Amino acid sequence: MLPALGALAGVPGPKTSEGLDLTATLRDPTKPAHPALTFAYKDIFDLVTDPGELINLAGQPAHPARATAMTAALAGEVKKLDDPHPSPTVAEPKPAVWSQPVR
Image (tube, rainbow, N blue to C red; front, top):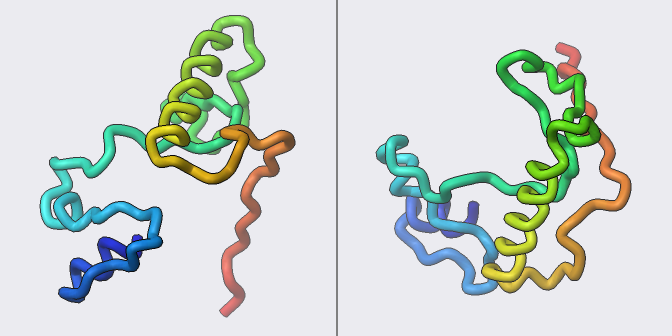
């Protein structure tokens, strides 16, 4: 986010930042800065039928090719961005926990 924040403020982002300048997308949402978001989780959810992401489809027989393709896409992004982290996967991912702040 730092390159985008810097561009919006009229200053260059830090050279060491791994972020992308997303200002073109912020100005025109029809122009995505990146074709996909890639995360290091081995979870596949059908957001249409399961918007709460309760049923992980990754282990079901119909989806191993998709899980393999997603892992390969992540490895490609890691290589393209010269990410210093050696593994593009999370051994035991934990779900995010969020609770509404008390007012």
